[in-house]
Structure formats: structure tokens, C-alpha cells
Image (cartoon, rainbow, N blue to C red; front, side):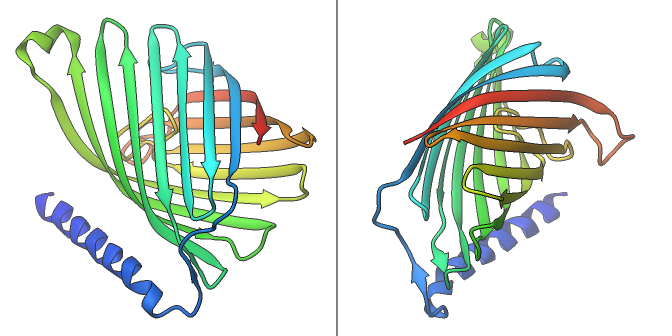
Length: 247
């Protein structure tokens, strides 16, 4: 297991070196788009049709994002019964040959189960986006996850639990019209949920912009705990609806 982790770290290092060397071999590289970013703010309400111990029957969350094309930032928070989440991400992905973007990402997630424990997740990732056309694009992410947990009952001993893992994410987007879009994804993590690798999330969603700068979003997600190592069992199903404002 130790050798396997070392081999994966070496492969990630090689990929990073190739990424930074790529501009020398590409005829067209856009490192940054000097234009006003596309910004959004959204409020969502989730109903857990089937829930595990981590989810309450209803979850309220809000998010903000700023998309500079090559540089992207978002943050969000979710509140449910006895639980609070905060997540933020920063991605930098230069555009190559006006066909694809590739780069690095950093993410942080904080999870608090009141009077029980706290959890911190730090994510480092390599990212790739195929964006040759405005109608269809797909994103692939592979990264390294560091997890630190502190149980309240053990706080006086200053004892923390550290572990690490890897994560994968694949997403497809379709822009059917300027008002109507759809997406689907399979991932080993969710925006507010970061289990060790082996628990896939299957997700899909629709977005309809009923005003020039306001859209209605709807999504459905399925979580299968330990699907890769044991029998298939649906552990969680969440239906989410929300309103997003574009600036």
C-alpha cells in the first residue's frame, strides 16, 4: 500500500511538470482572460428522499461563484439539523489551442457536527476541461484528499485523527439553449461530502433561466457507500431545487 501511494504521488508530480511545460509546445495558450467575471449567487433547498446518518430531512445551502474563465472561485455553506458545512474552491486552468483547459485546483471543506466532532478536508487536484464548442463540454478531475477529524470528547487530549485518500470526478454539460442547460456527473466526492474513495455519487441536473439573470435549478443525486468493495446499496438520495442569480 505504501509503495502504491508513492507511485501515485510520483505520477501526480510528473503530470504537474507536464502541465507547466505544455505552453512551450502549444501554439496558442491563454493564461488569463482580462474581462468581467461571470458571477452567480444561489440558494437551494434539498429534500432527502433516502438519507444516511450525515443528512437531515431538509438541508438549506447557499453558494457564490466567480468565473474568470481560466481562474475560478466559489464558496458555499449548508445548514441542517445539528450540522454545518463550509466549502471553498479555487481552480486555475489556462486555455490551450482554444479547445481545452488544464490546470490545478485547491479546495477546503469544514464540517461541524455540534457537540460531537469537527472535520477538515483539504484537496489538491489536477483538472482538465474539454471546451471546444459552446454546446458541450466535459470536465475530469483527479486529486489527493487530506482529512483531519477531532472528536469533542477527546479534545482535552489534543488528539486528532489524520487520514488521506484520493478522489475522482467526471462531469458532462450540455447547453441546449441560452436558457436551458443540463448536466450529469459521477464522482467520489460531493460539494459538502468527502468520504474516502470507494463511495461514488451519481448526479444529474437541469437549469432553466426564466429571466435574463435568474434561473431555476433542479438536481438529483445518489450515494452508494462502499459500492466498489461490497454489494451495491443505495445509502442516500437527495432532490435539490433552488434559485440562481447571475451578475
